[in-house]
Image (cartoon, chains in turn green, purple):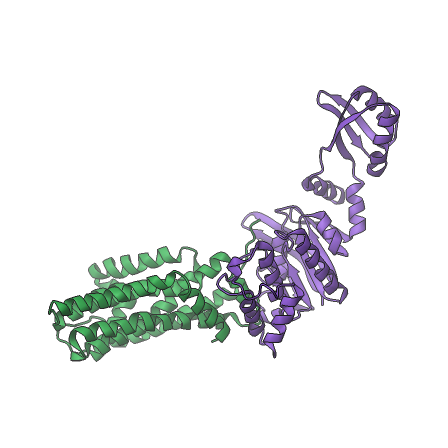
Amino acid sequence: MNGVIAGISYRALLGRRRIWLLILLPLVLIGLSLLLRLLGVTDERTTVTLMQTFAIGTMLPLLGLIAGTGVIAPEIDDGTIIHLLAKPISRPVIAQTKFLVAASMLALFAAVPTFIAAYLLVNLESGIAYGFALGSFIGGIAYAAVFMLLGVLTRHAVTIGIIYALVWEGVVGNFVPGARKFSIQQWAQSIADQLSSSAFFTTEIKLSFAIPALLIVTIGAVFWAGQRLRSFSLTGDE
Amino acid sequence: MNIELAQVSRWYGNVVAVNDITMTVGPGVTGLLGPNGAGKSTLLHMMAGFLAPSGGTVTLDGNRIWHNHEIYRSIGLVPEREAVYGFLTGWQFVLSSARLHRLPNPDDAARKALALVEMESAKDRRIETYSKGMRQRVKVAAALVHDPQVLLLDEPFNGMDPRQRMHLMDLVRDMGTAGKTILFSSHILEEVERVAQHIEVLVAGRHAASGDFREIRRRMTDRPHLFRVSSSDDRRLAAALIADVSSGAVSLTEAGLEVQAVDFRRFTRLLPKVAKEADVRIWRISPADEDLESVFSYLINRSG
């Protein structure tokens, strides 16, 4: 972790228009909760559905994509990353710092709003709010790592990330049971299920699979990103 | 400190960008000269640790440069792309550089570096409000903040106005005199001539010439030059010119005369004299092959 790099990364993420993308989705989630509350629909089943389909199913991967690629891909695109790389700092440390920045943004913009939205509907009932907040937090960490790696690996990180999040996790994951096993979203739900005792919430992936999978994916992605940065090349315009 | 390149090549697929180059860049200012696309940036990126050589080795005082972040304690790099964090002020940008180097007194170092490039007055403005030349200077300040022994600059004078250019040239020259190893790339001969004591010429990925700038300048100007001349009486001028040994060939075309001058200096003195004596008025004279590419291709054909 390097404080100077973290500082620049936070400013790059928050100081631009990107911050509106980060704020918009959590606002929609909390807005939906408020609306349901006003309409008097505050049952557990609705809350779980909102959490599963929107908080973890849509908002988390999209925010993961914005924050994960956002901490590094624009700098690689415009070449400003050279300012950080041409310094006597190990490149894996730069990757780890970028990852921590992205993960902390997801904790703030995904996990906290998820807790607030669930709390607005069912308070702390059946551990739903705590469960989904924790699931969102841990899932957010994994997304931050994977999408940051994607930002280092390819210039088409956002496109590939959207395809992964929407097509693989969204569509394929819903129809092909095997695909669900390899989905960060499903692992996040398994974590959420541990704290939640709600009868309306069941998950398929066992914790004994989800936890090692999350660890391997997160650590592996951060490590790989560090290695790729070590070999970062400027291929001249010539 | 010395940057040593030993039989360095770099290729992208089937395209060879840099071909078997061996050179040592030592203390003082070295200009890396060559037309666009000659492989200057590729070579500079390999010296800066931002590109792996496909063959050969690039070392700094014996230490491999690729995959070695420790070299940045000794190297300052000014990349060609002007992108810098636009949301930072010049001060914040240079200070961040000092902090990333873990300098004992980053504020002092940043202040000194900004003073070197005369950017103190604009230091509290965001970089996105800077002109191209100011961005270039703030990049130089960030690269100099840790007082590196080696400074690499990729086309550093591009986009600067004449005053800023002169200032940076003085700065580079002074640092060279102080014993630092400085290499900068350029495709403009005059630029290199003003600053560098030593020139390395790169043409089409090959090392075309190396040495003192006067020597290279002489080799460049002593080649046969082709001039187009139009005058009040082309035929009479042609006859007068061909009588002198400095003209290799004179041909009469519809657009005027084409003169091949074999001795450049002598020819430039001869032409006005001959015209005056023959009472011929010269309307226009233009070099037909003065572009750098033809100068360089002449050089490489001679050395190759």
